[in-house]
Length: 176
Image (cartoon, rainbow, N blue to C red; front, side, top):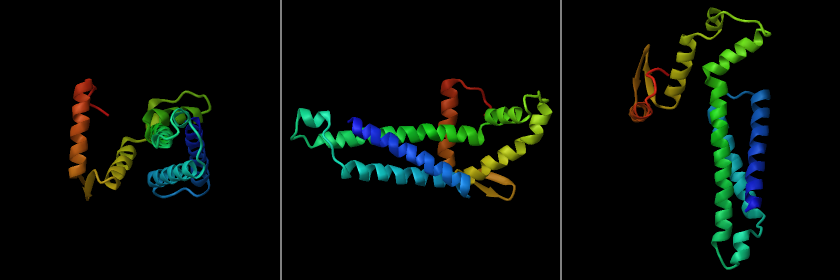
């Protein structure tokens, strides 16, 4: 099974390298769509390479007649790849959208100088942040925009109910 894990990690590392090069040299317009499609491509590459180079794993050694040995080894590696990608997605959105990350960047770019909160807010306004997030929700088909008004789609309604129930269950404060 270790071969599947190694292959999954290598596929993910290649995904990161290609994505980093692509975003650096030719930034895509639809960034997350590009990231997810690239991740899917490398998952298919993992699948192809896994079945192209069969190996003996410990399940196979215990029972050579078992048809499940290779299948479970494949699933194990695929789940590791998927969980690595999901973890990367959290990091990606933290860097791309996180207010805390943005504030840290602003402070870092001030060359160690202290900044007044109004200076930080000047570079990262609530309107800009809100507008960008609404654009993404329109793209994800969670909301529709009609001029300056925004409304929920059926998909957005379902997600809003899930988020509200989660906030109530976890007793999170009302804001974002």
